[in-house]
Length: 474
Ligand code: CA
Image (cartoon, rainbow, N blue to C red; front, side, top):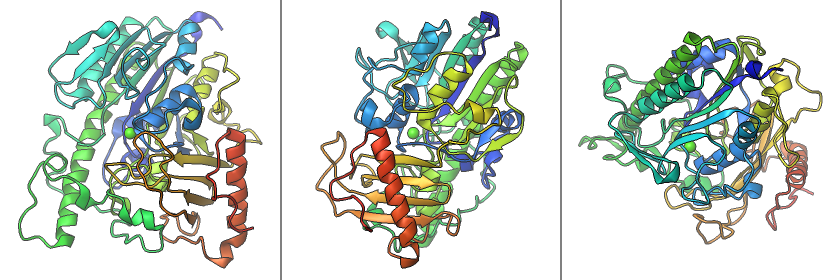
């Protein structure tokens, strides 16, 4: 393959944008015509999952191709050790011009700054929606007026323009659609004249679920009226009416923020088209994890339930991927790096734990492709959301979750430990995960199988089972 024929990469990653707020995934609440273009031009993944549903750990898993117990970025407070290998470094060494623009959220300074990029311009920490300061190499600070999603998009278009002779690998990492959901002025009134539907599980009372689930601070009532909802709660509402009012305030701003990102993605696709780069450029759209959009009564992520565990994943590459295709094969965020290296003809180092799913993009799923995935969230009783530490296994049909409930001295996790609890869901009979069947004798054999599979995955990936949380049903 000649240097000119090597595919470019445009990797667009948003923050906290759930698949069920993308119309290509059948959203009931919004339209994303430009993201839908990527789906119709390429492949939509319906079983793409993160291995730890929170910003910093997911970003570290994607870049390093390893799980968080290996790369060390287990919580929001554990920044990436940038002496580790990341897949953009291999692209750069292979002759790609590499760029990282937008949200980094893996720490700053000599030990944590982006490495492997010819150009980087990133938000400090979470950054700001309006008039954001951005950081570059050598301590350079860039100050501009404008809306963050538009500025990141502008910078990415400039990068493509500068490097259109290729090959390039550009990482466009949006701040949107993270809390506190501040829209661009042009979207202030979007959805003003409609009531958006509540999800089917909006009134979930969490009956039968683990006790630690019942005390998470992710309910509509946990949103801050001023910073999150930008309003005072109207007087005289019943609790039920207030919850419904809060949902409308919250979800509309979330989707307004998504709208700007959708438009920006369209501008990037148009730029590729106008430069004649569409056929030979791999375009990825994903988010660092999913999000509860009122599902189970919640906002936020962190838990292993479907809305949080799932990642949107759309990939177009007209030279190779059949347009309008879909896959329900299980892929995880640690697979992204090796897959892209594979597609771009760059060697995958042996230590990488993820596996290339390029054959799936070719329409030929390998016979030995995994039928399960491993998940672990470490940040027990985190200050903001009071979520429990847990790990688990998801197969195509079931999910077993062990809330081991111990901070284990992880940064940002808090004690004391809570008693171990388990949940088991039948995803075929109960896709909304309402009925915890962990104690149902009819599921004893399934539970035993899943416990064995969980132990097998932990052994294969080199993670440690929590003491006392080994096989329960034997
Ligand atoms: Ca995130």
